Image (cartoon, rainbow, N blue to C red; front, side, top):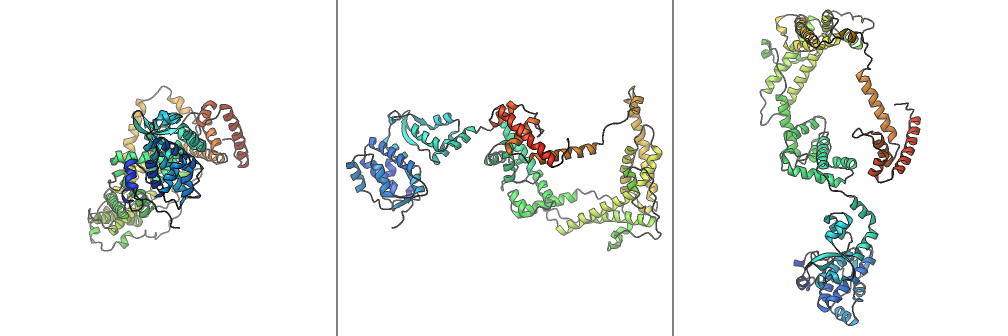
Length: 590
């Protein structure tokens, strides 16, 4: 037997079913039939039955539809006969005589075509809603009854809610018999409850989604990961989150979180692309994340890299010999070894850890010092010379890579010079510290002066760097210490002596932060022993997410839809689990 053919569209189906054109004039078909037997059957019913019979035939078709399952295959003749049982035998004979009913149809196609047949038959019958014999709901009244949107009602129709056409308020409209609605409710109760719990999104929620999505996107998360995370936090579907983000991006293309391929990336996103590329993210992954072609991502990276190089600080102390150097290997090479072994300095006892660490770095002799300063300034000189050769429109990658390597070498060399002279800052700070000054604040201030001196020192004059650095540090102390004294005198209180005698009892800030992080990690670890509902109750009751104050039993119960007594029971059970988990992991009082 030849399988039944499918209709691809009303305009092009006359060769398959000759009656389609005539049917289209007598009954409007907004949805295409999946099988050509049903539109032919509809045409015969409209021509050979009365309007009252057509309405009863629609009821019979609905009864057949209720008994149909998508997994089975049905004979067309049997289906049509069950529907025609609703009209007299004489009418049945007239309709059947004009039909070719030999064939089989899948259950999926039967469900689809029967729903459309019911709507088209009632459309042709033009029956007033009052004559239906039971209450009729419109789309609007049904949406109010279940507190859902009309879009949700349309989705329910595609999922099996049977609609009919009635004359309502003088015009044809889609209506739903009470019996049809009750039947759909009984088979889809969970779906209806979920739809009823849906609430319209407020502007505040939309702003929070946009703000959180922008923050997460800057960490490298894509649309899918952001939608999944925010859906869990806000108890919304990922599709709703994605739709909100896309709606914002379409309305604000200049500040879009995920701009479309036709919208230029704004400066913040371009810098983000470059930053992620530097962190090791591949071009293909960046192209997927930002909806751009790989060539566009490469172009953005090259442009941002060029701007980054242009912003490098390459100021240096030039020397006449720099222009004569052909190969810089000898200048940029490693520091020469000391000809005379330097005796390692003895570290005084009871020194703070910072001061003791300074003795681990050996001092520089004159030759080593000259080499490092020549290396520092020549690396910057060479990088600046290459930067001037860069073409802004087509910057060469090899040239930019060489500039970046020279700049990194200059920074490393400067740090080596500074580390070797940190003991000089300490020795000068000792001579300037007074009863009112903090020694380590002076050392910190002197370190800044030392770094600036390393950048400004002209090694070509033949002086030792320690002489120039000592002068720079003492000059800074001579300026900063009197200023601090003046500020202290200006805001002096009458209890300075009492303040000076009072011992500082606060713990070290770093130690407090590390202890806090340890406590948070321990709490998160044992919270994973609880299920989702128990976690939510414990977090809300004790304010563990830091975003809101601890809630009462009643408030928690209202948020998850249970009584406060049930919340108390779950909380008690969860706390027992946490105590047991803390004992197993040997976690003491936090």
